[in-house]
Image (tube, rainbow, N blue to C red; front, side, top):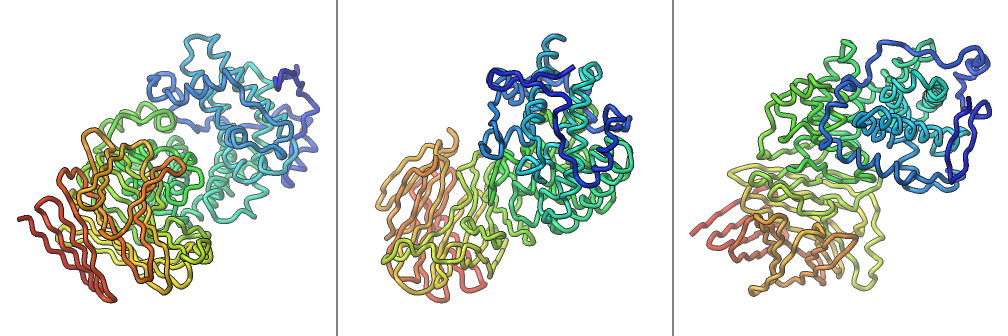
Length: 607
């Protein structure tokens, strides 16, 4: 019986004419494919240990997936006639990894009756059939390592989510198994040429899963290759402080997800996990817990796709239960579908009894990876990028993200300094893109937290050096000072990208001040140095606040965030070749901060 696929109002028949890409190791197998109806599967392997608990999950935690499934049912994603000639963003993000199959499976688990579940199965089956029809030759992005590394596990999950229906619909089961087998073979043939990056780890996880799922010598080869990749890359790509060498928290979370799912599979099968790898993955989870904002959002430094990684609360919940590590899980209820699929009801009960992380952050210097954490009162934190930029990306180096009152205040992390020559506005682009950070200093003493670093490059003219100093007294202020050294006359802006939806109110009490209100109960004053213009503009959905100055260098600009400040404030900066002195007044309190080379002095007058 042939399977019909609905595309653009027409029905295309799929049967013996469907062509399957086969990598070299699978060519011999394909010669004899007529002798077996479908690839052999190893029984008894557990990949989603909590699958049986999915139907008992309340709709609330699954709401986003249920909404996605319903939208997909109402408006099927139109597929291009030639995917490689028309690779739309929506099509690539959904069909290449077949990401919607999990949403459809969750909707089926929450169906009210058998007919409702069958309707969801038909939708999932049609999505897979659409992909089979569209992705025939092994070429282009449909069959590169990143696409296969995500699609192989998703197809395997589809077989598990709809196991009951596929036992009846043998032809569709055969279709999916052949697709999964061909893609795993193609992935195995390509991984040797994949750079040592997060996608190589994702490919290792996919081969590990395919090798445990299928039976035979070729599958055992996939398992051995995937396992070797996972453990080798865990040593090579993850630093001793737990951070991924790519210096992107989003990619770090993506890599952590791969290892947590592998650990869940091994634990469900009562297989051993290497002790050293358990320690390294625990370090990754701890790294993420230290960087995450109070609302669980992962900082977006150098993130190409913020939606690539799962939320921090899901990752840390799974890590806390799997690794038996108290204090990893964020406060709040059990976070949703993916953790339940990996942990099951037993894991959900264990999560309920886990000690949670303290609400207040501690100052942290993750030096090996180059991130620094400056906390404030509970719910307040500034996360700074104090390391050199990899891969020629330097726009956000020495930038930061800031949360106050449990809400993010900043929209993007590229809150840094930009300089353009007054005679040639395009001269800001003559510098090298790759940013090098040096002379990094980190100090925590007598209630003061201090970070300083010097940037060269990163779209900054070669004749300039940018020295950023950040002072913080938890619960009182964060003070940012930017020194520009070199020669020439420059237009300089120290920019802050605030969330566009956060109310902003301007005041002028002898000098400009801004009041930012991320919540009804919390207001943050932005105080600026005198003698410099303060400009506010809208840009790409963010509110950009720029402290601007024109003139010869050296130059120093600065501003301070004063959380929960309801009294007038002022900021003054003095500097020469050896010393920087900042005086911040908030109401009757007066803070004098002096940096003389490597020495920091603090004087507080609360009279």
